[in-house]
Amino acid sequence: MARPQTVYICSACGGHSAKWQGQCPHCQAWNTLVESVERAPDSARAGARHGAAAAHFGARAGLATPSGPLLLGEVQAERHRHQPCGIGELDRVLGGGLVPGGVLLLGGDPGIGKSTLLLQVLAGLAAELPTLYISGEESAAQVALRAQRLGLQHAPVRLMAETQLEVMLDTLASQRPEIAIIDSIQTVYTEALSAAPGSVSQVRECAAQLTRAAKAGGITLVLVGHVTKEGALAGPRVLEHMVDTVLYFEGDTQSRFRLIRAIKNRFGAVNELGVFAMTEHGLKGVSNPSAIFLSTHAGPVPGTCVLATLEGTRPLLVEVQALVDSAAAPSPRRLSVGLDAARLAMLLAVLHRHAGVASGDQDVFVNAVGGVRITEPAADLAVLLAIQSSLRNRALPRGLLAFGEVGLAGEIRPAPRGQERLHEAAKLGFTQAIIPAANAPKGTARRFETLELHPVSRIDEALDVVRALA
Image 1 (cartoon, rainbow, N blue to C red):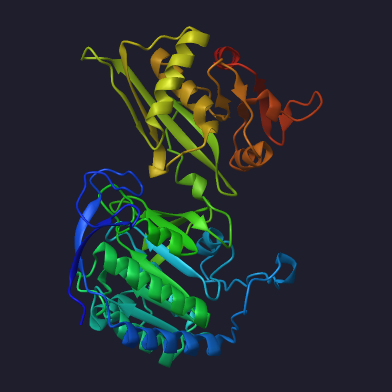
Image 2: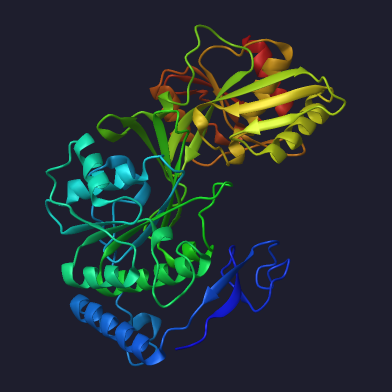
């Protein structure tokens, strides 16, 4: 038996180092090396076991390993067949559903609803496909109690409480499920390593072997992952590179609404957003998510502006709120929630230089309603209009929305897929829209369905339009 060996593994990239260093020599990240004790398995025994498992899964899937490299034109390219989950919002994020042989990583805060959603998915598919739920954090009785609360106790879902990798691989080979869920990957360990479950080496090795088994056997594998205090998936970043799809559960546990965002998807679009509501019968898809991100004010309120943004392929209307107040400290605060803080400082400088609106002695707070994160630059115009409204204490006209990127020269750049944004706004009853001039319809028409359009090319023109409408 090989002697245990102490190594230092980077939690950011998974790289190995023989000794501890302040900076990882592989990815140059600081303070990410974690001590781990590893014991190499007996090479002959491990090779035989892994070779037999690969042969079994490969024979079952009908896979043949080519003898050498092939020309690109000789490879038979087949389109992936998606299996709908039965939950429309989740299918939207996945690009149509689950893919046989695909590996999905689902991360989120504790108690956000990961296990609840996956149990609902398995219960809906178990009538047609063989499924398997492997729980490493809860006992079988605890999972059964959750199923009773959701009214899914009669679903033909096979359940097992296990944390040892070798037992999981044997079960996958014997039960032959079409869809398997591992909840969670941080609880799985292999006897080949002496490190504790949840360590970087254990998570990486277990995920790699489960991924190989899923690919060889055509199993749709879902791995549930923990997140760190910073909101990133716990464990090495190489875990995200192993899988085909990475989904993040977002939202406040005190709120009934949950968001699922696709960060990586080899079988569909990235940055897709699914909106769910937590009910007593589990998570339900929200058919009109724009209503969540719009506040219901009795009348126009200073410091608010509605933004038409895009989340993947879906247009959403989000209310942007701004509060500008006199600074009590020598250094005014610049705080944003759901928006880029560095971009907020840049927009305030543009507003001062090209529109003559100074806020150097004011605290500026910006918030996106509903807990949504907005990353696209098309939110710039709505943010500046909300700041101007709060600074002057004058509300924007009712039924007004805006979108457009603001450049450092004060110009307003076009946003992609402008007509889809306008169509969503018209569907919800908005009547006025301040948009980039490049997004305006061709010709002299200044209307789009029920919307009156106000194309602008510079930030000072946008402020003039607001003053004229007030």
